[in-house]
Length: 107
View 1: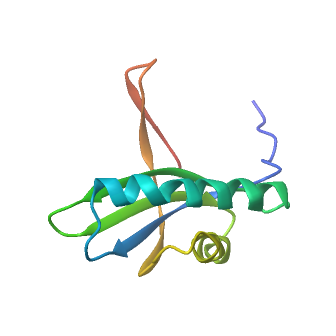
View 2: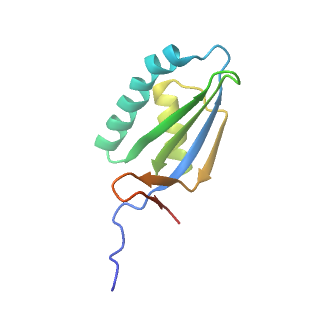
């Protein structure tokens, strides 16, 4: 079976944010900026998606998973949202598929 090439191939990137003072309330307050910036960039022709974020309150760290064509778009997303981004690295996400009870992930 032939697979058609994806017209918008995207990778996933992990954004590490070392963020003194961050807590759940702060993160919930700022994530809408990230979502709004992603929607705006997508509407402008640069598709990006905030897949999700994880807060580690004791370590004052937030990890965000972003889908985009390249690291530059991920950096631009964080700049537009005015969020810190200490490190951006390509990542392979293996996400649970609740309907199938299995993992699904990228290569």
